[in-house]
Image (cartoon, rainbow, N blue to C red):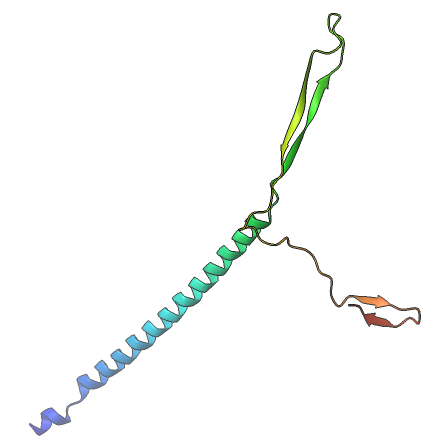
Length: 114
């Protein structure tokens, strides 16, 4: 009986295995959460890009004014177009804001502009 209580060969292996499995599970859970956050951020960037696009277009009218068999005009069209109006789901327009641009002064020194 004393030999059975002193035998810990299997206990060390199973304790190490439980620790390794716990660490692997924790690492995988954290890695999946980070990948999910990165994927959501990329989808957000794509939706912002689509929301900023202006899909307006216009086609100019055409007129054939050459004289054919005594007629002054033989065909025309007025042209057409579409103006993309802002929707509730559209994003703000992306604009370039210049900040901390160095400008030279009359004394030759450079200063940071606002």
